[in-house]
Amino acid sequence: MVGFLYISVKKMVLIPKPKKRPWIVKNTKKVWGREEDQAFYKSYRWRRHKEDYLIENPECVVCGRMANTVDHIIPIRLGGSRWKWSNLQSMCTSCHNSKTAKESNR
Ligand SMILES: [Zn+2]
Image (cartoon, rainbow, N blue to C red; front, top):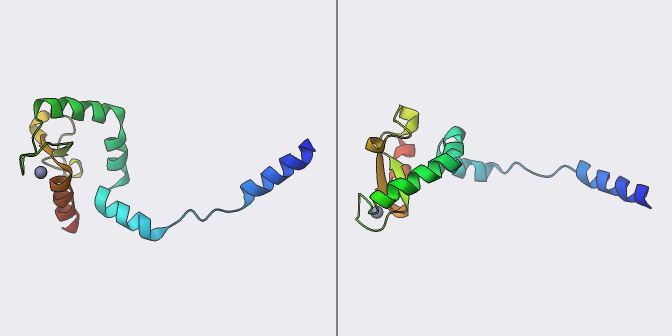
């Protein structure tokens, strides 16, 4: 009985899952940029850094509403500093999204 279970589990694992969904990957790349950037923005160190910055600079630099994200003035992929506060600015989600969209359209 145990042997039978093992075999059926093994068979289930071997069934290939359709992992690739090209339309989703395309959208993600446009919004988030390169994969390394994505890993950086998910890192614990960055989230802590961002929280510290938002406590000191709680307003969106564009519209003055409550900011919930920190943007790099010079993007990391263009050589901007990841950690220096002089390269950071607080932004709300909608202003940050429109900035990101403009940058990836270039
Ligand atoms: Zn804003």
